[in-house]
Image (tube, rainbow, N blue to C red; front, side):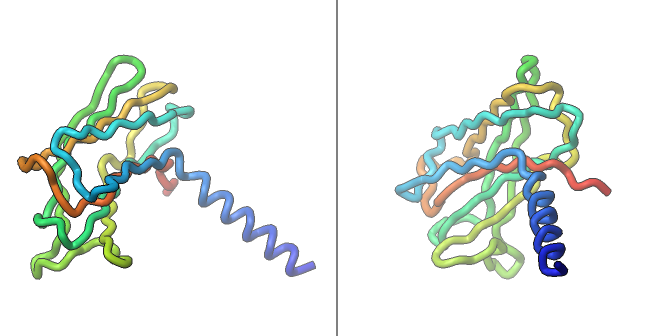
Length: 155
């Protein structure tokens, strides 16, 4: 009986944790190069415009990546015609020039907050565009760029 209660409680806890993830998508670069003009576009389905969300970008690279930061523009196009756009510079190394991302195999994974505590203006499909803002035409050592939307944790 006690094992059943613990098992059911564990399932409920797991289900409640997974409900916070609303959207997750990743663009993988097979040749480990993100071209300056290769825009990443994704469609984010928004079903609850009253909820508060946290938006994050995930950047995965190898040690061949030649810079200590990644520059990108992230733009959201809302169904009502509105938009929200901003340039970001995300640091990838600390002061000792060590990669700060999680290291697994030959890859380093960084997750950066983009917007914390955001409300979408309405239900529907919000179009996301991520633009590489580095000045070099082809940027080596980049495995993928991903984006997640989670319901914000209630305090």
